[in-house]
Amino acid sequence: MSEQLHLAPPPIWQSLEAVESSARACRDCQLCQSRTNVVFSAGNAKAKLMIIAEAPGRNEDEAGVPFVGRAGKLFDKILEAGRIDREKEIYLCNVVKCRPPNNRPPAKAEIQACRKYLEAQLELVRPALILVAGATAVEAILDVKDPISRIRGTWFDCQFGAKVMPVFHPTYLLRNDSKEIGSPKWLMWQDIQEVRKQLDLLN
Ligand code: URA
Image (cartoon, rainbow, N blue to C red; front, side, top):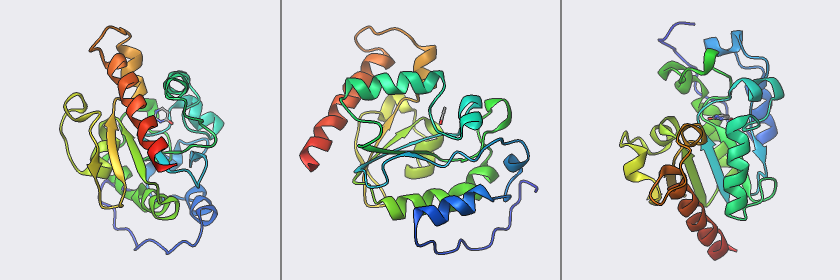
């Protein structure tokens, strides 16, 4: 399992359950050797809003569920501030489904190996809105490398037919705790209100 992967074309999955079961058995990159659980998704597959973050951390790897650790608790508060129901109104997943050791950023080859699962999730959930949290998710979906501080809060079109908004990753917000006007946390609180507004327009 070198950095140079030669992957077979992805199968055409008919359901998210089929995608998940392939992901659970996946050995297409080295992350399979150190994972406890494959962290596939949480929330509602019929939701209009999909949230895509980077990769599971230690708590998520142990639980098999995205965003259950410290960043997850903050994430829950952000959703609460937007009156967004985590179980009903969002489908939540990561670019990479297995934990990178020591929470390092996923390598290019790992992102590439996992991309078939993310694309299948996008295809089968067909969200109207997507939030991409952090640089890895922004690059995976929008193929841009601009700093999040410059592009957050703006809606972009993407190849998957949804409106996409980059937002700060909750782990970044944990390191930047100020809630002063103009701070990353304050901006995140504004962004989630905009997301609520767009969700209401869709309903
Ligand atoms: N960070 C992420 O990017 N995803 C998780 O699921 C947890 C922490």
